[in-house]
Image (cartoon, rainbow, N blue to C red; front, side, top):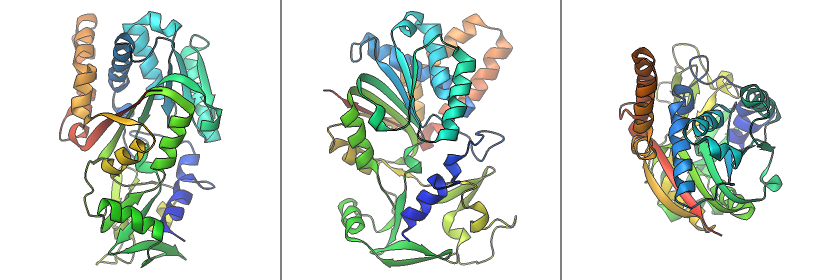
Length: 342
C-alpha cells in the first residue's frame, strides 16, 4: 500500500491514534500550546474581538474550532471573551467540527461542565452539516496530521507486510513534487479538498491556524513519531536506518503503530497555494511568538498583573513563556491566517 494509506490507518483507521481520546501534556505523548497555557486561547480571543470591532466580521459570527480535542482551546477563548468583552457572548455563537465520535462525547461533556447552557454551542461531524454566513475559524496543529506521501529521487514510499520500500511514483504525486521542486521528503495530501470544503460551506471567514513547519520545503525527511514525550525519526525505526538496532528502550514500529502520534513538518508554501486555488487568500504568516504578541498576549498579562497576586501572575507568566520563547514554541511554530470574503 502507499505510505499515505498506512498513515491514514495509523491515525484515523479502526482503533487509530486519533479515534481514541488521548491525554495531551504531561500524561500524554506530547505538549501543545493549548496544554501549555490558557493565555494561548486568551490571545486568540483578543484577535476575535479586534476583527469584530474592526468590522471584518459581524458580532453574530460563529467561532468554529476544527480539531478541538477535548475542547480546552475553545473553552479558553470563550472564558477570555467573557472577561474582556462579555456582551459579545450574547451575540456570538460557537461550534466544533469533530468527526470522531469518542472525542465528540468528551468535548460535549467538558463544555457542558464548563458553561452549561450559557452559550450557543453546536457540534458538526462533517463539513456537509455546516452552512455559515460569517465565521472565525481556529485550528491548532491539524495540518501536520494530514496524510502524506514520502518521496525520494522520483520514487515514493510503500508498505507491505510491515516492510517499507521505495518504488514507482504515481503520476499525481509526480506532478505535485515537480510543481514544488521536491526531490526528498514529504508531500501533504488533502489541503485542496479541505480548502474547498471551507470555501463551499462558509461564505466569509478568517481562518487562523498554528503548526510547525516552514514556508519553503526543507528537502529532507521530517517524518517522526511521538511516544511518551520521546521523538523517534521514522526511518530510524525501519531497515533503512544504518544501524538496524532499534531504540535502547525497545520501541519498534509495530509497538508504535496506532499507539503514538506520527507527524511531519508543514510545508506552508504548498498550503498557501492550495488555499489560493479555492479563493482563500493569505492574510498573514508569522512565527507563533510574533502572533502572540500581535494578538495581545502582553496586554493580557498586564491585566492579570493588575488584578491578581504576584505569585499567580508569575506562575501564569512562566507557563506562557513557552509559547513565545524562541528556543521552545516561539520560532518553531508558525501562525498562518487566511481570509475569504463572499
